[in-house]
Amino acid sequence: MLKIVGLGGSLADVSRSRAALRVALEGAASAGAETTLLDLRELDLPMYNPDDENPTAAAAGLIESCYGADGMLWSSPMYQGTISGAFKNALDWLHVLGAREPPFLYDQVIGLISAAGGTQGLQAINTMEFATRALRGWAVPYVVPVAAAWRVFDQDGQVQDKEIEL
Ligand SMILES: Cc1cc2nc3c(=O)[nH]c(=O)nc-3n(C[C@H](O)[C@H](O)[C@H](O)COP(=O)(O)O)c2cc1C
Image 1 (spheres, protein in one colour):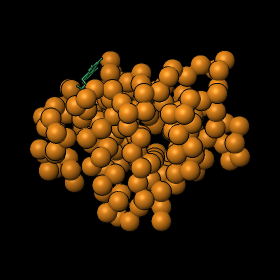
Image 2: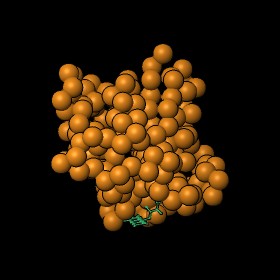
Image 3: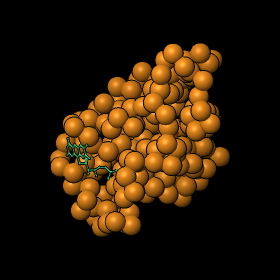
Image 4: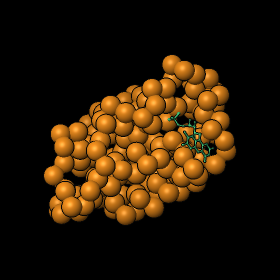
């Protein structure tokens, strides 16, 4: 069974990027994958510091889950025209995987999602694509930049726009 790990969401209680990630993970599960959600709000990661690469329990869990995945789904909020600091910090923790063989997220296929208030979601996706390459993965060409995410997902994370769900 393929292991698909979803990473993302914002630190907010109501998070559309987390809601979108849940929908995508449900799709992977219904296609037969074993899925895990790494919710950044729950993980509460410390800031990555290159002088101290001893991960906390939460960071170690993140690192091992990501390394053990066959593929990933990333979902970031759109902050100031790009990915959120919390999402980038999670990716920075994966730097410690550079010492493994194979390194980083070698050969993993990574699906990219963003949730934006406006219409610039693709900018966050493009940033994630650079990071995918840096971490030795492959970005899925079909990406999901969710514009006006507050209209697409309600407060409970339910999809209000069936076109996006598809
Ligand atoms: C700090 C901050 C910066 C934001 N910057 C942008 C932006 O540059 N462009 C945009 O379309 N929306 C922007 N937004 C709106 C968010 O992308 C939108 O609320 C999104 O749903 C946040 O993700 P979340 O629901 O997972 O928390 C910003 C929101 C915050 C809090």
